[in-house]
Image (tube, rainbow, N blue to C red; front, side, top):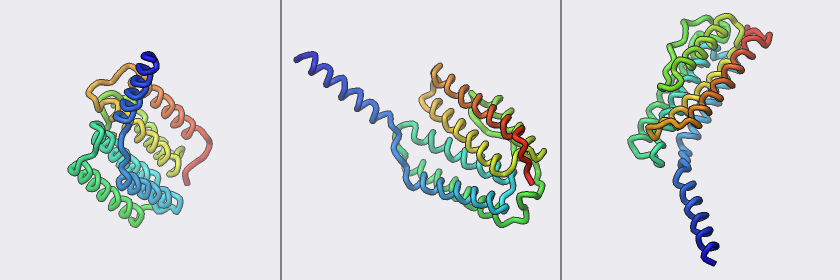
Length: 200
């Protein structure tokens, strides 16, 4: 009986620990982010947003993802953090509108993308992958849809890194997961650059 009681307590503690670790949902932030992603995809599909513009907009979405992950690291999102995320999303929304309504189209050349911003652990590799994506866009090997997809993948890596660093320590398992994510992203970039599809 005592073993059953101990097992029951252990199960309860494990369940309570899992609930404490689970990050709370942020429906307003998440819904808005989904709408912005949809607006970017629609702009790419219609040709209103070029590959470079899509790349920049997706990087901006990645910064919002990373900021959200960092804000939720303590298990909750306070009012100041929510306000900061809303301001970031307001700015992103305005940028999406601007890119959809400017004179650039999917075939218009633009200045090189801004240098990447990422965390400490994956900086060098992330920068190299961002450079490969920009080179693929410039050469026409990567079209707007492919660029947006590759940048979403880079954004997920940034968010995963932010979550890993949230407690101030990155474990070996977290570091290994980040490496696997980056290896997968590198293979995706290589595939998109050499798949024979050309941007128009």
